[in-house]
Image 1 (tube, helix red, strand yellow):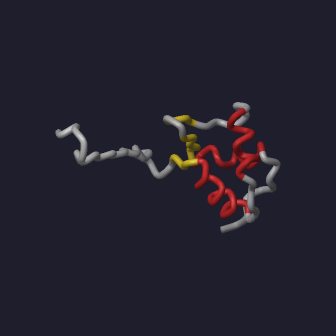
Image 2: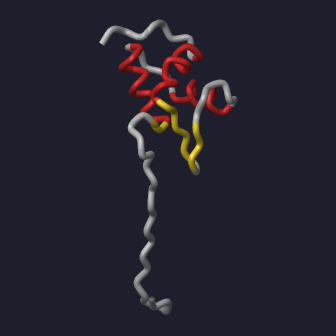
Image 3: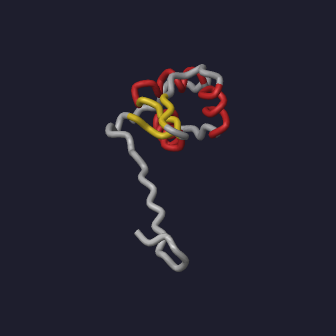
Length: 86
C-alpha cells in the first residue's frame, strides 16, 4: 500500500450488527414502544433509565441494545400503561 503524497486512502468502517432480531438498538426501542403502548416515549427518558442502570440493557462498543423480551420491564419503568391490543 502506498503511503506517500497522493496515495489513495481507504477508510473502511465495519459495523457489527446484532445477530438476533430480538436485540434492538436504543433508537429502535422507541419505535417498538410506540407500537406496543401507542404513545411516543422521549429518547432522553429511556437514556436516563439506561445510564442509571434501572433497566436491563447491553452495551456493545458505543451503542446500547435491549433484548425485545425486556420491553415490558422498560415500559413499566417508564410508567406506561398496559400494552395496546395488536
